[in-house]
Length: 174
Image (cartoon, rainbow, N blue to C red):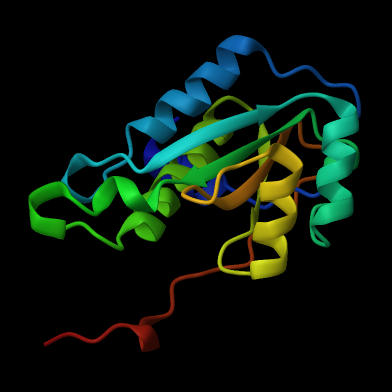
């Protein structure tokens, strides 16, 4: 599968095959793809929590109102931002770029999942303070770290139509 094909095939999946297995090798490939994402001054301001435990997946669903798909998903990957990792590098040059960096890591997970035949759904946590607090408490995440998003992962049980398309009106040529 080419990158072009993966981009065009990617969908937000909200229906997963219950009980489907995502292998440790597949999880490693997803996380490896995430860690190959670009980041400001190569600071790599991220960590990841892989959640397979069904009770913990249910607690995420209770804490985050838009993660209902975790009921049947095989696992969740929580992307954790490390804002302080960028503060002292090159006189603070990369400071504040962790949202872009974690977004790039998240997108790499989504695209890698397509190639592996898996489905994903990106559920934002940051910048919503109540969601940040709930996920931080649930996983005992220290205050210098920031829960960025929850990614539901599993074997898709739906094939939704694409929702985006190229829009010439959003392009300026100068």
